[in-house]
Amino acid sequence: MKNLLSMEHLSNEEILHILDRARDFENGGKPQLSRSYNIANLFFEPSTRTKTSFEMAERRVGCTVIPFDASFSSAVKGETMYDTVKTLEMIGMDAVVIRAKEDEYYNELLEGINVAVINAGDGAGQHPSQSLLDLYTIQKEFGTFEGLNVTIVGDVSHSRVAKSNATALTRLGANVRFLCPKEWAGEFEAFHSWDEVLEDSDVVMLLRIQHERHSVSKSFSKESYHEQYGLTVERENRMKPDAIIMHPAPVNRDVEITDELVECERSRIFEQVRNGVFARMAIVETILKERP
Ligand code: NCD
Image (cartoon, rainbow, N blue to C red; front, side, top):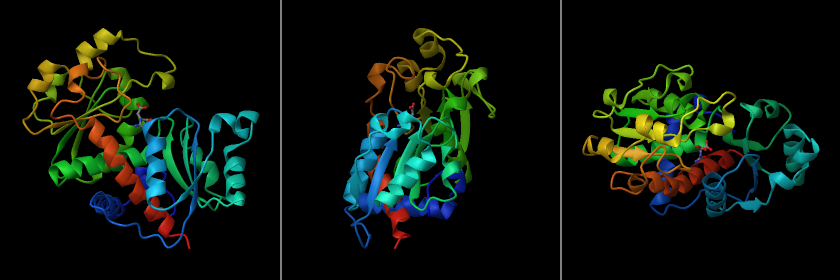
């Protein structure tokens, strides 16, 4: 694996290898890198979890993390993504982790760039490291993906998390359904009522409304979104006994999910954040191992 750009590029074997290594790391396993590598995190969109989680993971596998602040970089002077990454390569970077608002920004890096590129989110495209940590969370819970009913709820068409997970989970044998307003289904077929999906879901995965990616916003008041698509206590009570709640976060409490459910028994929302460090250690190690 030279880069990590999209879940669509990963085979099931590659996915399962990363999940195995994540588990090894969680159990105290040591990184298998033969030297220290230089890595920079280029975040052109806001991030709390993904950026700090990558940084923690990079340090734990022995990388030297070179600080990069996108808002003070020459990108604000009009430098292209290609020139920015090429510059970091010449300075001595082995890998860059990038989040940007353009879908498939990485296409302009595929030729002429020799650092490894790890996609930490491209617009409404893909978010493979989030998907891998979500898969790891589901695998820890159920031991398998085969036959699980996974319901992804909310702003499906603008969500890179929904797309990455739908690709991977379907390929691994899960039954992925979407619950969202018609306007947000995009390329997918979707249900529009909780009654059709709630009681047989093994995983309910909630999404934040991606206001920053809406050109024309389907306007919902917080209250009416919560009423139609939010996970309320009444709905949570109707879930299967061992079903879990996931959300990539950031959470808008009382919009996608009732405040008091965020840390309820079946919520894995903060556990996902914890698992993210192990999954990203596995990602960074797998990619850097291929570089002499
Ligand atoms: C997600 C993202 O940035 O796509 N967050 C994350 O990385 N955990 C989801 C979101 O912003 O709603």
